[in-house]
Image 1 (cartoon, rainbow, N blue to C red):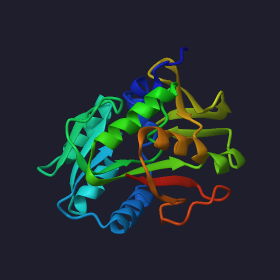
Image 2 (image 1 turned 45 degrees about the vertical axis):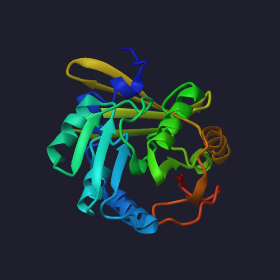
Image 3 (image 1 turned 120 degrees about the vertical axis):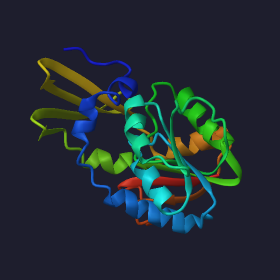
Length: 242
């Protein structure tokens, strides 16, 4: 059994990733999109970028609200799945968030902790620079991350899930500045081990990142109902930046 080093390209492109997360509830995603688009008062002709869109669940719902949406993700498998929802105002493309965008957008959404995948801070900075440069004049970006402070207090280290006959063993830990989720299972006659790895980024570090790239914080929320952020109690850390 060997772990995959380049986890965000290897794991996201396996069929097992889609099996493990096939039952994700879209309710929170829809509530968040309704609340945030209303709060931002986005015009219906706005062109939105869903950065690291996965299989497109946020993109599809944003498009159903009347917006032109482009969803991009590094995973070819995820984009291939999302393509079935494409229409003339909803497009999907394979794109690495570290690469500059060819267009500018009225709003850029980076959702569901789709940030902090990289070992070097310089690469996270590169992503934020791309977001800044990818905004139209008066454009806005939404970065939805987990609150690592409350995660520390409510960290379930082990869990087991059986889905489609596969028993997934999931072990979580915080190590060397990263939140790790080790996922092991037997499937198709082989043993598999994948590791999801997200940087342990608190509000102080985000603020340093934003300052370095020239993004200004306009609002900070602590959940999908857009409650004020409280470091000790909020489950999310959601930034509105421009």
